[in-house]
Image (cartoon, rainbow, N blue to C red; front, side, top):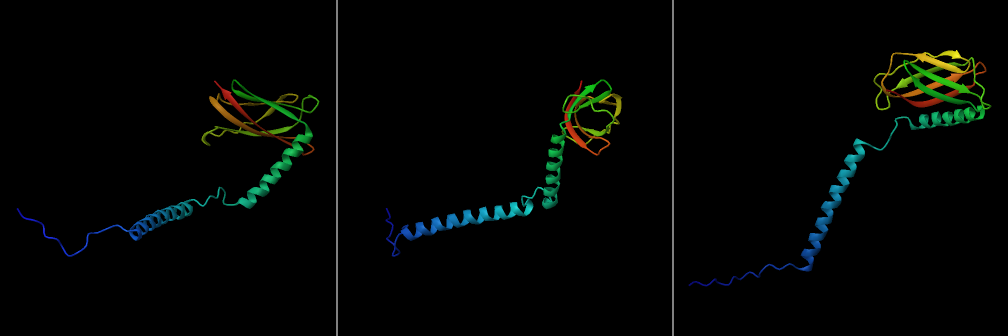
Length: 163
């Protein structure tokens, strides 16, 4: 049998300095990777929802003022999906129908802009406005605007569903 001859070099031992260097190296790699991911994420999407946030804020303020004016009018609207038509009924604060308004609107699918329709409303009875159209099927969002001769504006949004 042969015996291993002892070497003159000491055996490798892990000391406190080795453990410290390993921990520092580990966290340096983790921080570097996290920082690079954050930089890449920010460059691809900086978090801006709009390209023109200031202008959007001004438009929002105008919408709030318009809603306050609309509330002051006290008008009420109802909309219904009828066979081959959309019917909108407008009433004032006391419940009387509002005749002689100019009503414009659009119908859109809730999930897509494909198939947008522009109904043409005609006053069929005092305060009742109808738009005849081919039978749409499924759910549609109606956005309409009523305007009287004095310039008062009333906006409504309703979800309508045809079978």
